[in-house]
Image 1 (cartoon, protein in one colour):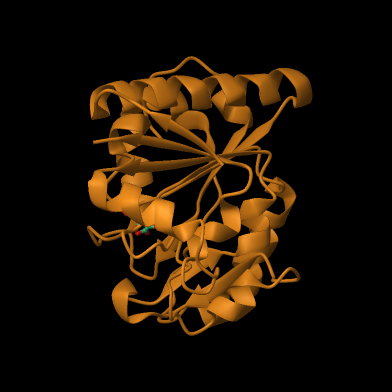
Image 2: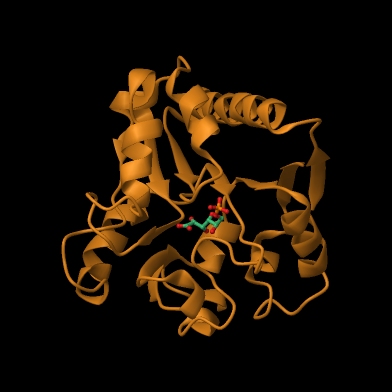
Length: 223
Ligand SMILES: O=C(O)[C@H](O)[C@@H](O)[C@H](O)[C@H](O)COP(=O)(O)O
C-alpha cells in the first residue's frame, strides 16, 4: 500500500481528480477505451465536480459504481443519482453509465442482467474507492450476510449484500473484481478513517474488508 497525505481536503480533491484524469487519458491513448469505477457516499463529490469539466474522450469511458444502495434514483440515497448530478454532466455527459440498479423490489432478480452488462467493461482500468470507519469498502461490510462469498477468489462479479450498518439492501462489486483493477485508489478523510485504515492492514479480511484491496492501492488522505 502506498499512502499519500495532502495538506488539506481541497488540495486532495484537486490533485486526485487530476491523477485519475491522467490515468484515464493513458488508457484512452493506449486502448481507445477505459473503464472508471467510482464510489458513492458523501466524500467524492468534489472530485466528480472537477472531473466533469476535464477534456477527455468521455464517449469511450464507461463509468460504474463500486456499489449501489437498492433504492430508486429519486431517493437522495441513490449513488446513481449522485453520479448523474455531479459527474455525468459537462464534458463527462457523454460517458457511458453502466447501471448497478434496475427497478425491482430486491436486487436478486436483477443480478444476472446487471452482471452481464458489466462484464464487457472489466477489468476496471481506474478504480476509486471510499471507506467507512468500520473498514467497509464498496458494500463489503464486516458482518454482512454474503461477505464470505464476496471475498472468495472465485466470487461472481456482483453480489447482493445486506448488513445492519448498510441500511437498505445493497449490490456490490466483489473483492476479486475490485482487486483486479489496473489502478486502485482509496479516498479517505479525517483522523478516524486514517486510524481505521492503519488498523485494517493487520486484521483478518472478514473484520476489515478494505484489506482485500490494499495490496496494490494508493490511499489518499487529508485531515
Ligand atoms: O454507497 C456507499 O455508501 C459507498 O460506495 C461506500 O462504500 C462509501 O464509499 C463509504 O461508505 C464511505 O462513505 P462516505 O464517503 O459517505 O464516508
